[in-house]
Amino acid sequence: MIKVSGLKKSFGDLEVLKGIDQHVCKGEKIVLIGPSGSGKSTFLRCLNLLETPTEGEILIEGESITAPKTNVNKLREKMGMVFQHFNLFPHLSVIENITLAPIKVKKKNASDANKKAIELLNIVGLSDKANSYPGQLSGGQKQRVAIAGVVAMEPKCIVFDEPTAMLDPNGRKEVIATAHDLNKKKGVTIILITHYMEEVVDADYVYVMEKGKIVMDGTPVSYTHLRAH
Ligand code: ADP
Ligand code: MG
Image 1 (cartoon, rainbow, N blue to C red):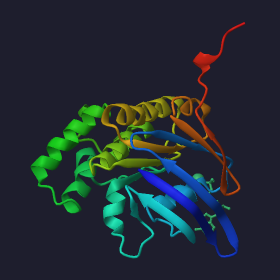
Image 2: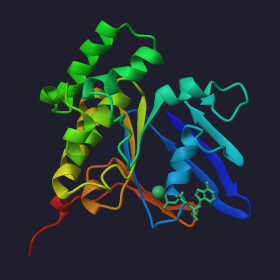
Image 3: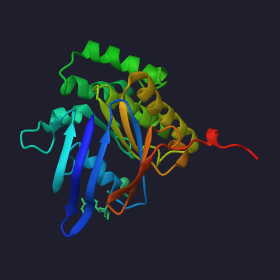
Image 4: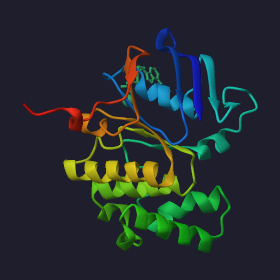
């Protein structure tokens, strides 16, 4: 699904990504960990051209996104993104937040978009909040609405950049369970940046990033593999 070769990114004199070679297969759940400032966000932002790579190639479903003819909007529909801060419009209701992009960008008709939004609210466990406003929701609920909004665009892959950083433990659990369900039940490919070890355990692969390079990758050993003494 994603193939990254020789990816480098500099900001002025500062080389933030120093040559990344990785691939992600369809339906996988990848977790990216590493110290602050190691380039995790920059890496993921390159995947949907929120940052322009300085060197290297990124293929998504076989298409080079670094080619000049790339349709950036189409690419971003394919590669949804969820950030730390909840990207919701405060003056729109939950359901309006979810249907906005499908109606405006995908030109869906309002009734189809609404039907789909209700289905998605069900999936993220918020069917009773359709007519609430973001200000009336907890952090975990807001983030789940944001996720439903991203899923409404039917992306192949969702990139999560510390989606639980602003949340309390309960909110974190809700959001991680939602992401996990999307991956397992809907086959959405997921790449997640996190600092929380408990969010790493059920990944298919973990990448460890340090100083602009991926220095380790492998499958996480879950606690269930440890034997008590
Ligand atoms: P992480 O997500 O791992 O904490 P980032 O990718 O956000 O790391 O940042 C890596 C480095 O790149 C940091 O030193 C940061 O200051 C720098 N950086 C990120 N974005 C920019 C930018 N737009 N301009 C200049 N420097 C940046
Ligand atoms: Mg970051």
